[in-house]
Length: 234
Image (cartoon, rainbow, N blue to C red; front, side, top):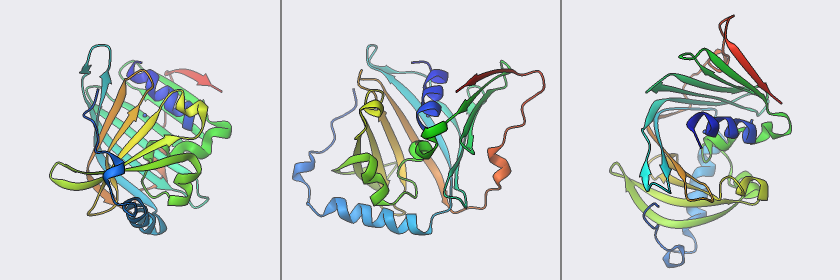
């Protein structure tokens, strides 16, 4: 699936061969609850998140990653409880995804094209792109079966590994699981793996994460050029 296509699917869904993880059966039965409790404490005070990100797609049939994309990710929980998101790819080419008011916009300046998606009944799933950031354990458990898979260091930072499997068959048809590396120091995900049933997966890493920075709502609005080619998806 091409990168633009993946983003379009994620916008519609919400609207973005690894080493084996440790066996969860070998872990303390209370470890999952401890991690979720810490994440819940963050969630109770959460209103915004910002980080640099890099992402790569693993192509199973080729057994290799495609070229990496890097940029800035911003996420705000609005006063009405809805999610505001901005994923701005800066390298290798600018691509901006914003989600606000139940509408996702993907703008590609290089080819002067934009896709606008009305999320409709799926707007409450916008937080899939920010999975593990500020959601309560109860909310996560409504949508996923959650397993604890031990610990691993990411860039030298100790992390707990959680595997979330969608309860919805429709979601599982596209992503069979989501793996989150939750940083011990701040209980935020610093790495995410979006696993597809065919063996492909998207690996996303966050760096320089900031909790509750001031981000204006104008960041989630895109003023498109008058001559842009627009594709509308309902």
